[in-house]
Image 1 (cartoon, one colour):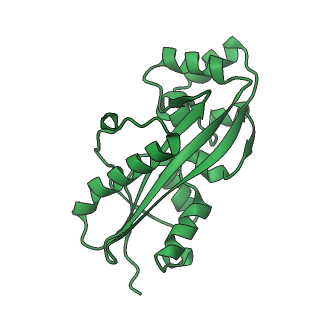
Image 2: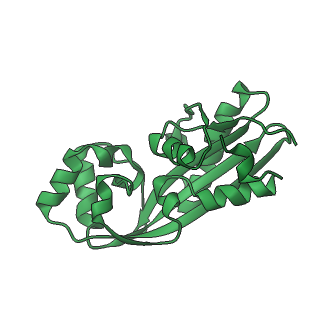
Length: 197
């Protein structure tokens, strides 16, 4: 089987670094899909739908490729949180998150243009947050990191200080579940080692 180029339909530097760490050098084509068009109250369905739209938006740019779209949200107390729009919202969220737990959902859509097949799945990881002082919350938000991340934290950055533990896939919290990607590639007839550089 011919191995197509691996395309990441995401501007996320964390997702790109994650793939590079495991030997996959993706072609990055950030999707310009307007996420505000989609309003779903069920987090798994929301992230799967957004991931698929992101991948489909990028697909016409290629003749032969495997295109990966992803989207992440944090679900907590029945609310769904994406990236906070500003620092005041990030502080308000952390005042709710600290000492609490939430479920981080990531949708994964993989389009194989050569086989004309699409696989869409989601993964969820439970994240337990540390109790934090107002000072610590303000200092963390001042780093700028929470503004760039779904759920207002990055487990691979400063935010790792404030995550007590997780239940489930670690890389899912970074924005792309590597075990799930391996399974999805297998469903399409590929081995993850086919994409190692």
